[in-house]
Amino acid sequence: MSNVRNTKCSCCEEQKTTNPIEWVRTIYHSAREVMRQKWSIILFVPIVLILWFLFITIPVFSIPSNTYAFQLSLYTVKDYVILSFLALVGSLFFLTQVYSFKKSRAQKKAGIALSGSVGGISGFFASIFGVASCPMCVASLFGFLGLGTVGFLVNYQWIIFAVSAFLVIVSLYFTARRVHTVCDSC
Image (cartoon, rainbow, N blue to C red):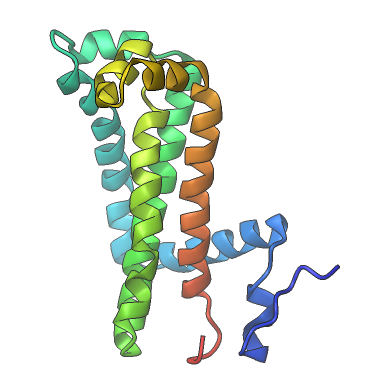
């Protein structure tokens, strides 16, 4: 069975793949193209730091009497790795989205560039849950969902994190694919 879907454009068929290795290649080549821009190099680290800070700040402000020192003491090495991963991918997604918008605006197709924003926003909100590592953080962030739902979220936190990381990567892939379109009809 072929990994290539039927598309209207024959010159870009190799981009419409379901092969995970091709997804990684597409994201890698797109990231290289985006990071060749001077503005993206300047903005990458500050955006990572802002996202990292935001992921820590949300539980600090949503839980009464919580402080940054206490919140940081709750995190394990695994939590710091997750936090950093989501901040790096989120920053790359944001810069790729901006680059795609600039490229599409130059080609007079700005509406197409914004079509991946919904996936990115949902991936971003899913990543907020992914960094809520303690049960109190989850309870305070998602308390409006009820006790049973919060219990479910706490018990299956790592599965939900995997889903949220997948959403962010899928959003990044579709944005990266738009960066690498070969022709104007795609």
